[in-house]
Length: 264
Length: 355
Image (tube, helix red, strand yellow):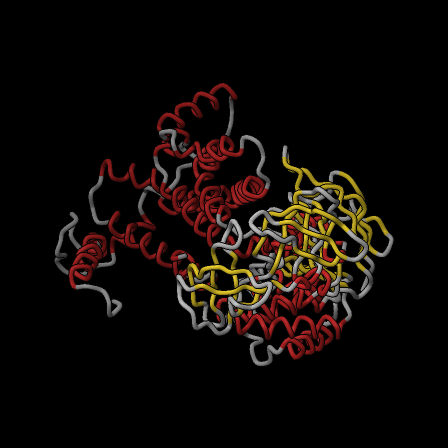
């Protein structure tokens, strides 16, 4: 884990940091197996009943999960189609006002989501009957876009465009060049941006709670609602599953593109 | 294999004119070098031939066909980049095979051609290495093989040897020349290194500020630079201010202020000067001899700075001309402050107009 050259101080700081990040997770995971009505640590006994409760609870967590997945996946996919070409175009052609456009594409990051939600609420009210799923989808589409754009764009700013010329000199059309050379080489930025975007949407509660309807509620909002009247370990059980879910995504990414891409 | 013609090419970047009304012809199978300092327009010219940028005026013709508006990927002009531009996510085999894949050749055919090319450039056994796992020299060979395997009609080499150490340079130089002759590809080399240009090319074109200063074979460009700038570039380090006093049938008389007697120089060694012109008398440091001060017609000077350069001594001699005379000596026993005689052979002197 440590290089030979790593000093003791560095080792201690790193271990402390790891404990600081991991300890709460361990507490949550252990507490989720507690048979008691309240979250207790250390747990007294072992039970899977709270896991059972996730699926049987009157608060419909499962529909929340499928709503969240639906919005998160679709918004991320559509944003890939918008933000990646935008980043490519902006990085490649030094258009006038590129700096301004760059700020524009990143701007949703800087606007407080509560403000943005209010604006959207107003807008949808004016438009009349827009389904909640579409409202949340549209909102997320905008607020998660900067993550894909910026991750892609930042890799492209150091991209060696001579590679495109090399491909052209070998007979590759601009289209082929983009797909064969440039996209594979900025893949790291695109994938990490897409993961961040998806996780942000999956986790987002402010906008989703303002734009939802009784028919369409996302998982974070379900969890918040549940918290208002119950404090049993069901939430710990859900959290444990979500940790597992994140872990799975990371393993999947590792398998597909290699995690070391984050180190570059 | 192709005939390349540039006709009155001009390229401007905003206020800067990078290439001015440049015309040149490269015969089928020839290897020419564009030589000049950075900013002389040589790379701009190369990029226009490759199709990465368009001239503002003039025509580019390949085999008689105007290609100004044909994009790079349809020109079949191969280019070797100074930084190699290897695709980092492909192995050396995949890098070389890429152009053939674009051409939709059968897999077996691609394999054959790539292997032949790897043989030719000496890359056997390195098929599965990624560029970052290869040494500079190996990367260079991959880049060369990649541009050659698609059989371009014209090959452009941008500073092909500049990133290599001295030993590799020589072997790559031989390699490039050998491969170019084997494949008989019309080749243009861009370089700022005169020895590279002279040793590789059949014809050397010296450029400055977007214009051609001289276009001749390597021997002539080295021995008979046509003006003071080219001479400077070709290693004539001593430029002595002088005046053309008289031009006779075969000889010219050149007056140098600090000398009593004028120097006689063959007319063929005077370039573009007339009687009364302010001139520069140019001579290479290697062509000056130090002699006994008693010798007839020798100039008398004092040794100034001496720097040991490994294969020669760089010696400055003061007191003869206004500026110290630079001499390269293989053997040197004297020391700073000593008096010495200097012998200038009139065969080695060139006379240029003062710029």
